[in-house]
Image (cartoon, rainbow, N blue to C red):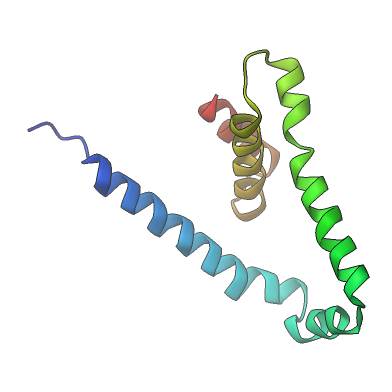
Length: 110
């Protein structure tokens, strides 16, 4: 048997690492930037139309990341472009290196 990790084990490790990064971000990083109680207070003060508008704007913002990649890389599908862009952006926010981490992640995924 080769020294390579079993695909199921590799997938499990990937999921565990992703959950751990998300937990660190929400439990440690974000509370240093903003108080969850204050944010919740602002959200509770919004009317339903404004909450829907907020979610709609956030969705459009996220979904607009893929088309520029598709324009400069013919053959790159929408979901692959979106996944590549979001993965690079997410890692660049939580790891030292910023834009370099973003570029390296995107290059690796391409």
